[in-house]
Each structure stands twice: as C-alpha cells, then as structure tokens.
Image 1 (cartoon, rainbow, N blue to C red):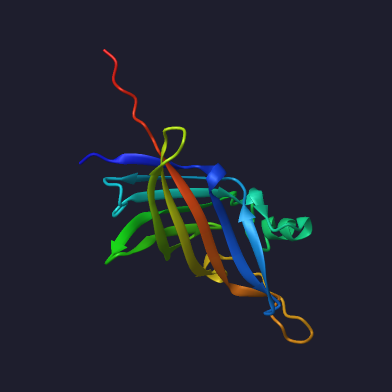
Image 2: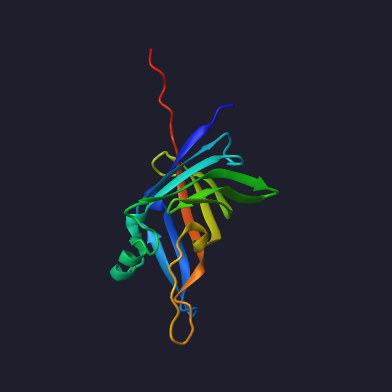
Length: 181
C-alpha cells in the first residue's frame, strides 16, 4: 500500500493551550516553533500516522516573566526536556475523527485522545495540495509531571490542573521526486 507524506505548514498553523488562572480567567499560550508530519494511505486521513514536536523554549503567553516560569523546573523544565512530542494515529470513528497517541511532556508519556475536525483537502494558488485540521482536547498537567501548585490567601488555585489543547494545522502534501535514470 502506497502512502503519502504530509508536513506541517508552520505559516498556516498554530499550536496553543488554555489554562484557568485563579479559577476566574483563562491564560492562553502558544508554541512558536514546532514541526510535524503525517503519512496517509488516502486523502481522508483515516489511519494516518502522525508525529509532532514543539520546542518548549518557544512558549509564549505574551508575558515574559510567566514564560520564564513555565520554562523553569517548576513546570516544563525546558533545560532538561526541550521538546514535547506526540506520536499516534488519526482514526475515523463513524464520521468523527480522533487523534489517538502518546504525548510526552517533561519525560512523562501518556496516551491522549483529541477531537479532530477535518476541514478537507484543497489546492492553493501555488500548486500545492493542503489539508486542514482543527484539533482540540484536554489533559491534566499533573499527569505529565507539571505539578507546581499554589493557592492564594483566599483559597483560589493559581493554576488549574486541566489544560485545553487547541491546534489549527495545515498540512502540505509532499511531492515525491521522480527517479532519474
């Protein structure tokens, strides 16, 4: 069976997360440097193998002090664990797509299941074939060793255990070079 390789187009993709702060508001962060690929036997991506990595040092919450704290040993420990990684498969479960696989953060690997909205496949003005996905899910940060915690004097939790993952991904179909004689 022939497979097609697709790679993430970073200029048309974003990787973000949202976490509750003080239980009253939400902080959004992004990973600015990431890469990934998919190998699929068909353009519907059912059964596609997916790999992904993001550089922890590229985290951006629009607040430098918070970013430094997130990169520290209190949270992601970027010095010792410079990337988060994912390896898994896209599954078409009766018309609903799921991305199921192993997420590794801070040296801890857990299986996660994320919801996928497959936007379809289209050609762009430059002759490239693209595929679009909106991916969403929730993880418990403590499952991955991100256990820093604090409580205010009033008893509010500073950072929620639950983190929403939101990815908007556009893949580019890779053209295989023709063999030369």
